[in-house]
Length: 258
Length: 211
Image (cartoon, rainbow over all chains, first blue to last red; front, side, top):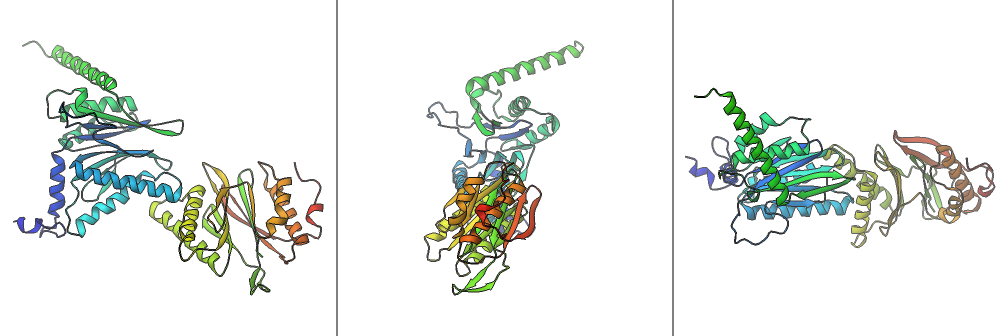
């Protein structure tokens, strides 16, 4: 039934749906997971790496995390080539703002500007929407640390913790339970992100080379966007595994032997 | 023929502009004209220029600054507003329709405190402690150099301004009987009474200046 209404992006179905936009979000649901967690002293952005082929050459900065300007970074889930086009636009907007106003673009303004572009692809032009959801992390002088999520429809929202990509709904419900607003610092956010990712990953075991983590913090009035090196990643994974083992042991002790 | 002055004090900016509107170079149309424009609650732009460029440009910038406020819910800082203004001047400079204006931008924000920017028709822009535009500059910058110091109080700044205005009255051939004054500080923009030259010449002004 929907066949008649989904080939062109720019028309509604009789039930008032935009099928192309929904299909784009479907595509993202199969992509590598990304999650973001807002802490009191910074933000964590974690992403599942899908390109773990040994033959791949060393990536310069990161596979899935893009730096947009001095105070903002983003991670994407979906079609990588679409993502490259969008991150390029984001960087362009950011620099244009810097040229016009002499100061870095506030986070929400950048997100909103890109979302206006994404929305245009759902209304006119006849081109398909971008098959990308983006998680943005940033700092600005108006609202401090912020986390935003945008999707192919051009909608965006500010979040305390959220997830996109494969198994994102499971991750979001986990975050809802475990995230403590106002009481989470960066270390706790890092531990929480490893815990959540281990549940959403396709493969059985979480290892340091399957995940990429970046943190955004402020030091001396300057924003630091840092990708965690393998050594720190391994330490975090090890810590997580030890905690899991302890929890398992506790459970076994409580259970009466049978 | 017109004159704009600006003095940055401890936590405020004092802006002053003459009030004469002239026609054909020789006729005084009006002597109580306000050449300052309110950009936001804590940002003032004073502007002089030819043929309507002054009002046109000032209103264009003011409306854009207001639009930013409407869209985003917060104001541009003084530095951002000055950069935006300068960017516009620079872009129009090499077009078929450049704006021929001189301006001073004075503002107060929480992070930077008081700031004063000097801008001219060539898109020169610089942050300064005090500034003058127009022929008046030739007569007053030396006075400002002599008596200005950092951290001036409002009283001291007004004193200094009075000296400058007296000097212009003494030595400049054009008659400028009043000056509009405004102060921009953390509580916003305050209109003060117009300042007029006193009888005495500027350089023989009150002896007790500093402290």
